[in-house]
Length: 323
Image 1 (tube, rainbow, N blue to C red):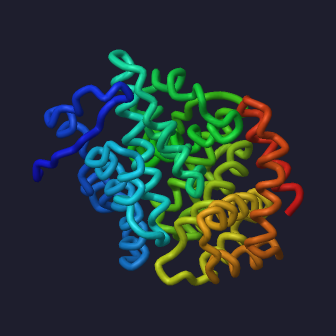
Image 2: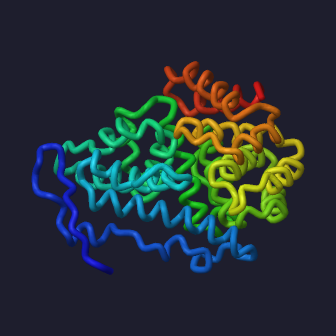
Image 3: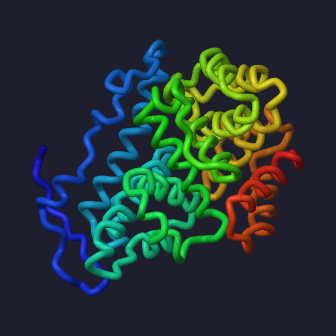
């Protein structure tokens, strides 16, 4: 791997991270290669689209190692495009991993500085933090401090995605699921999001997979599928796949719709109000992307004062019942 020079410094301005330490952190795009992971690759164009998303995550992670100043990092993450949110997600993981690792030696809180300039991608930021929790479980008690009391629970979604993406058989086949109660529900939404990648967006394979899960988990899984179907999308931006998923979701249509609404809100916050998101929003809920974003933000504000995973579920269920 080509040697890179980075400048990550802690808050006290001490020496930058050593090249040796950074060399152990850099991610390879092989980690998100669908063939390497054993994911479904029957649709080459969709495979390339979803694999490109993973590669953008890796790029964001590595860019954060190369750009210690958060303002420089924001510029390095590139111009606004449909993949920039995934680069922010990867960068959030990278910055928070370094903060957690160095916490024994400094009070560095670069992840909070990065959050301040990442408000258009705040949902992706918290999901990226979840990848750090998955890699360094004890970091949760450290990183939760100073984070938004409601949105921080999105990190459990990111944790569920990580575990399913990298330990697919353990999660999808053996069903070794973390947490209980409301925390488990949020985690399962991340599992559902990852299924979109594992099964390459195939409505039939996703449907068959979810049917094998306990009934009490299926709503959360469909919520994650809805989020991924809209936010990650398809290679040709056709509403055909979301339409087939809507039919397949059957009794969990409103859970699927709620996931779509969360994704529509995230895209609206980024300033991306494109035809695909709006078309799917109308198809699934009968509401525009803008309407869904307003609904999500309204309930987000209502429950923002609460600091429990149950408050996150209240947010999700309120959106679900409204749309």
